[in-house]
Length: 277
Ligand code: NDP
Image 1 (cartoon, rainbow, N blue to C red):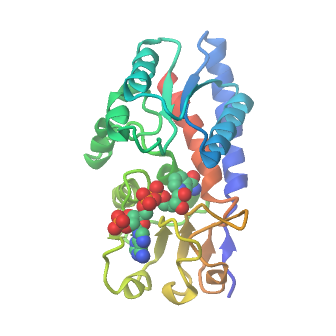
Image 2 (cartoon, protein in one colour):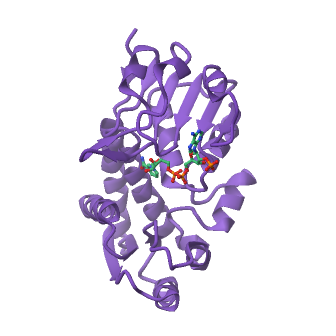
């Protein structure tokens, strides 16, 4: 058996086209959705992500502004930038590109973003709302996964979903979204025992670990839906958290690149438009 490869690029393209129409409509009403991205330092991966976000905004007709701060910038300087963006009525969405250099307090910066402009959905107010079943801004990557499942008509209700990873950015919100769709959810992490036994029970397996090829074919239930969130650089190539051979066992599999990453950007555009509504 060979898995159906879930084409995140195609699904994201359809989303972006639909969003571009909605942005054009918004502009006709006199409002141009505007995303401000704060980038601190020279992290090469962050630079690529920010450039991709800028390009995607541009193509969708969304205005984007990138504020670049020096690697050595002080906490106060960064916080003042966020305060100024909070106060700027022309800015609808604010995104602080992570990770920040080690000397900066990430949690404090994220807590400062106006929750109504928090298009990444990382503010405690927005994660709390997701937890309470009243979501507003949902983190883009797990939201993108849900939209990808929807696009492939993959039922979630009653299924056993196993999420490997418990970060605030991916693992936890992913689990909450699957739970909200009535999956039975298991969250695994680095201290989980007998991980293979658990993953082999998954109808839907989400890997958000950050380790290349971590999910081996032997960890996958035949016919399972396997979602690879991982983005790892190996010898200059981008690879996921799932070994490619898992395609021989899985029923559906997202490729890396061309899977979840594409959906993440589309959902950022969706959240920015939502913030402008
Ligand atoms: P984190 O490093 O924050 O979290 C990784 C998680 O994996 C942790 O919960 C950790 O457990 C768990 N883990 C690590 N080792 C093991 C192990 N041996 N067994 C089981 N669990 C383990 O990463 P992120 O959640 O931020 O990102 C995960 C991956 O997704 C990365 O590759 C990242 O680049 C990618 N990513 C992709 C995006 C996209 O658009 N496609 C967007 C965001 C991230 P513990 O908590 O116990 O340490």
